[in-house]
Image 1 (cartoon, helix red, strand yellow):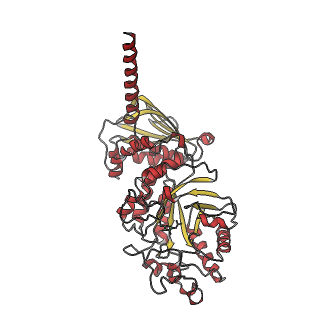
Image 2 (spheres, rainbow, N blue to C red):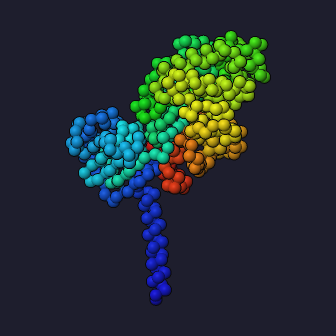
Length: 493
Ligand code: TNX
């Protein structure tokens, strides 16, 4: 008798735990990246037919985002400046800086309404993104029916890393402003905040510079085989930056130097060394475009002083049109006896123009300034300096590699099986120099918007969670459960 009671209790406990787990997965909204702390409650907040967004001074921009979201519900939406003036309140509070940092927020839903607090508008913007994921997926592309309830919750959330990036190569094959804006929208939903544009390479030059018009007139007309040519005008670049900034995303422009420079050398042939000694092997010669895939054969004529005039003019115009504090100077995959000297000079030109330089990891062979940020991609560089690091190690973050083994039109030099969602998600580091993570999509084979969507999503969502959620809170099975439930949202987008 006793034994069977114990047996019964044990089975009961097992059932309870199993259903408890099932509840934690199914009955609470799927939020990605996973918040630092979320306490879900039993009750709900039923959305009334009229809602008021009540915000304090300083939170006006964030209030507009909330109004925009709520306008996709059937409720009538009003907006009032003040404290305690409505059922959706948004407060900027400087005193929360210590607890929540630059990007953290508190979101609380109880039976009376929703309250969002942060020290910054970035934090409030992220509170809105979390709230957005608590609404049915239909909110992404249609007006919701009435009868919506939000689950009650207390969330306190902030990211572990300040750098949660996505790099897109628009040089090998071009992506225009419409796609880039769409990409910004998707990044914002998942709280990513750095958009790195690889703007120049052997196959094309993609940014208009008024003091160097041939870069786009000539270099903008070529692309990789089967790829798209084109370039961003300065107006488009500025428009993209504004669009991104409103969503807490900084654009980082990259001009890759001194290697990967054939499109520039084609546009201004006088930049080449005598007899094109800087092209080795000579895979192309002006006026021919280069449309192939090989790297490491072109370089600026680093032995000539006027090369640095060109570098200065390019950097100075780019710095003037760039809102963010960073300029990426490339620096990858080139063998050049003047390489270190070039990197040091380019770094100081960037700093003279009021920006901080970023470069691919090879730059750390040179004794760069302590402000320099290096971007790790293969981890093989023998560094002479300790810099801050953006982690883009190819085995986890190179999304030009296959999602699944054998996927066509993918690179495979880093891992011949590709880079799976799990390879991305399971990345961990305890390197104290790492300031964040960034995925990279190179476009030798990514020649359409659909292909870019396929390479970026959903793997970039794994990057978003690695950049935001502490590793002890991450679990691949839990992540894929939440990710599956984002499917309808992504489809609607
Ligand atoms: C390496 S990693 C490159 C790119 C290529 C990519 C292809 C790095 C800094 N440079 O030039 O597009 O491999 O996977």
